[in-house]
Length: 455
Length: 115
Image 1 (cartoon, rainbow over the protein chains, first blue to last red):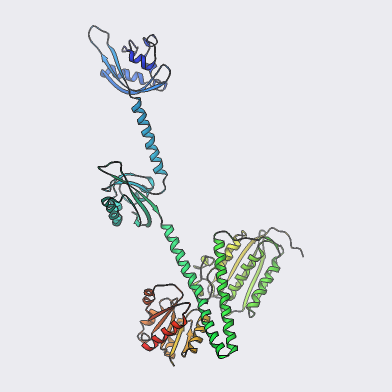
Image 2: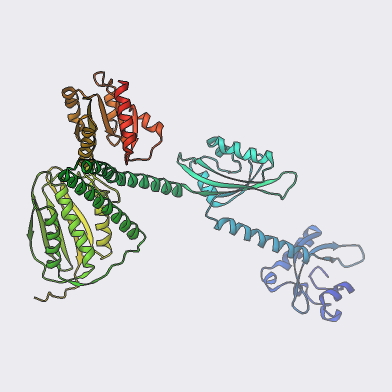
């Protein structure tokens, strides 16, 4: 082409490859060989200027075939300026489309890999046997980079300094040729926090001279903690169940002895005490079962409309039967019927009343109050007992909680927890007001649907 | 008659154990109040103490008292704990709930004969 970019001559390979007829292309501007995008960005002109200025230009770009297909080429343009002839530009075109396609798919593959790494929530790192980081995902970086002043994060040095045991284990794995290491370890993070991780270290045999290893970490701190918690709970439950069981063993032995002696009166006493302990054991197991059911959301709420006053009277009667020495004073009356599981709500009331009696500390008076608001009915039970310290109040409805002072009382610490779960499953609330030494008031509310009681 | 004090936080358990000990030939008292225990020991002069491990640190405290340290302590527990842990509580022996009564008798006899 001439220095204005007008095509003067093409060879047969050009015609064959790009599909133009000789007469279609001769005397045409070479810009028609560029994509529209390149034309708009002024790429052909740039190339022309460069050749005229430097005598030579190299560039990779797409060339448009006659049929609009494009091919990625490497072009070398030379300014030929010999005496006796007009200066002209010789453009040598090499088809590098295959290489370009490889490049594109490689880039895509790379991006794909990066995306996979990025989307893995677990920390992942690829390291060589000298602890150099070849690749690390964001999760790994954010875990170990924070708190350190390392700007370029390319070595495991700091991590190994904090966790010598990890270095020892990984180094051992590299040296022994154990290519699929799996282990668990407490890892000290740069911010001083310790967490439990399971990790695997696997050989990625990409480079035989300097092999690299893929280390995948998984935080198992919570799992381990909940396992520990479960063990503690089982230990505690076993302890609580063994107390009445131990009493039954003693009662039965004494029962046998007194029977042998023919002392029926005493024998009967031990039989009754044995039975009481059986009841206590059975109640504990019942509570445990209910708590497990509630925990997994499997308790059945058998809801229907019922009369609150009748239910409360029944609850009070059942308590009076067991504890005739206590006086339960009722204040207020329920105007509206309540939609809910009568049996379960009565369980809450009897639990509140029994608690009030258990912790009454000598006083014989318990108050039961009924109050209705716009939205709900509030039942409360007041005792004149030990009271609960402010610090402990937020935890009284927790599982296995027993206030420090009440450690001497029997029970498994599930009663109030069950109450909370039952009330919550009725979309109600439980709460407590208490002053140490002055007694406590336990409340629960159940939403009202406002269907007036039938007299 | 050998004298024993039972320390526990469950009145029913303590009174049953007291009855059982009495029927097995011992003079037994019980208390759920660790604060009263010292006065009770001075007064009653027991030959053996049976203490629930739930009474945190009580056994060690008693064993550190030169006036009490000579009295053997049988630790009882409802927890499933290894022997070492029970020994670490400074008791002279331990027994697990629910009691194996012949074993309880043997342990009480051994501790009383030893001291």
